[in-house]
Amino acid sequence: MIGEISSIILLTNDVESLAEFYHRVLGFELNSMVSTKDYKELDGESIAISIAAAQSEVVAGSSLAIGIDVKNMPKAIATLEKAGVEITHQTDGPYVSIRSFRDPAGNLVSLIERHY
Image (cartoon, rainbow, N blue to C red; front, side):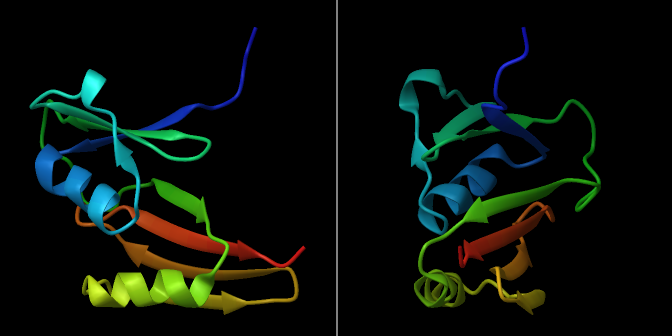
């Protein structure tokens, strides 16, 4: 039986720096019980992000996008700006506000604030 999606796995050439970004900038908690040199797992409220060493060279920004819900977009943007993250796309509509950027490995990340 198929259950809920419980994790996203990011393959990278630099496990440490990508895990640090998701921990320090986005606030995911490092799960030290399942972390090694080549694998880090970070826990969010409803999903885990697994960061694993790629077996071959990874092309930055391939076809993966990650959406993360936020409750306070201005506060989230201030945190990103403080970390030197550049917002590459902005959408404000009646139902959602979205701010997108690239993580250090080139993956597209969108912060989503829902207005309903």
